[in-house]
Amino acid sequence: MWRLLAKDFKAVGLFWMSGLIINIFFVMIFIEINLAFLFSQLVLTFLLTLVQPVVEDRFGLGSFLNSLPVTRADMVKAQYLSTGLLVLAGLALFVAVPSGLGWLIHSPQIKTAPLLAPAGLLSFLLPVVLLELLFLPLYFRQALGKSIWYFLASLLGLAVILTGALRIISRLSGRPLAEIFPVDREILAVPYKPFLPLAGRLQAALGTAGLALVGMLTLSGLVWLSMSLAIRFYKRREF
Amino acid sequence: MDEALVISGLRKAYPGFLLNDVSFRLPRGYIMGLIGPNGAGKTTVIKLILNLVRREAGHITVLGRDNLKDETWIKSRLGFVHETPAFYSYLTVRQTASLVSAFYPAWDNARFRRLVQEFGLPPGKRVSRLSRGTVMKLSLALALSHGAEFLLLDEPTSGLDPVFRRELLERLSALIQDGRTSILFSTHITSDLERLADYLTFLRQGEVIFSCSREEIQDQWLLVKGGNELLEEKYRPLFRAVKSTAFGVQALTATAEQARRALAGSQVLLERPTLDEIVFFLSKEQ
Image 1 (tube, rainbow over the protein chains, first blue to last red):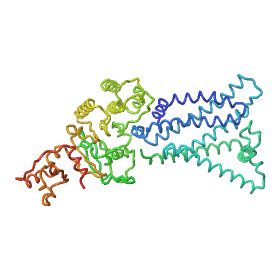
Image 2: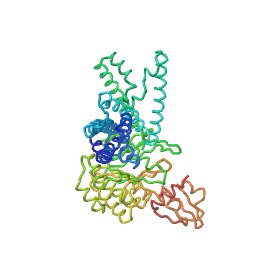
Image 3: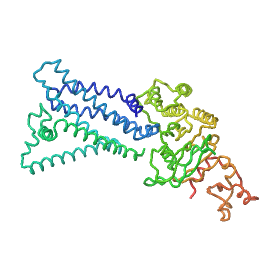
């Protein structure tokens, strides 16, 4: 697995580095609006993790890579590992750019404190991790082009399901939707504001440590499920 | 006898194509030519050996081990050349070798450098800037640089100039002199195999038509050239395939002795067929 990771660094490391550097300049454009900054950083980090799949798909490397003396399970694990490292690099930028700019430019327009709070970091980390956990099994199941379409369709489906679930909860609890999931102009500065009521209730019920533990366990379970599915799919892939 | 490759009862279906009950074996230290017309299933067999596609039935052992259970062990001792080699084409020849070498404990860098020199590969040039033949040479150099005990070559001579093709065939011939290295060589350029292959397996429409040593072919197969009398019903059982032209009739038999006896006294010409002729006739056989 480590040899595969080293291979990825040799093969696409330069693209990753260029992507990260481009990220810095790109995200600075959005720094005055925290929501835009968060969104751009999420998209750019996800695109960065797509570099290797795109390269391998573009050059038709399936047969070549699968003729190397490594198991398919190891290939999947190495992909998860490299994706995890890229997400961490994205997180490092997510922290470094606002902190650095705050230190360099003392502009009243730049209010990055909400982003640098634990909730701000989670608002970057959780979506990008969940997107990857959804995308990777699809990628290992079929060719890249198809997997991107399936991924977008899954996202659309999830959005519809979550919106519907919120409406149902609102109706059943007799509370207005705006109270359960408050979306207003303030999300431009505090992008995770709509999730605070739910997080507050969970924290009250489980305590901070309990919530962290449940969160970690859920995330670990999702990683295991996603990776198991990806390995199962990839073992069936034909080249 | 120690076997490099044993394939038995292999089956794989695609829409419009069925590889059915394919069985053959290659003793260690020999070269086998896998021949047949386009679409016969040669590449599918190679992909099944490498586990690039999933078999529906059958069994494959490479160097005495099961190709699914011991996949990594086998692949570390196997050199593979794809009919259309693909690499990270923006990397140079040297970078590609560095990337591949990390996966093979027995990688011999000095050997790779020697091959690069012999094959005339430009180490600093990007793969994307190499001609198809040169990419094939790179693929061969990579396959030959980690002490592979079994070489799996899928149409390795396609895209190569005649001079290098000849050199390559000589090199392959020299490789097996250690008695340890074995080669499965798929091609539709049968002239490549005339002198090189010790064994030949002929595939047609997903089935093994024959799999035997070159000596057996030389002893048992004959090309009969004669007049229309060869079309007579009594001769039919002798022939695997018959071709009638304006200049006469040509027929291929796999039972040379029987044909010689049956045709004794007839005005026919008996010739040893080339591999090309065997492939041609058997491809037309119903």
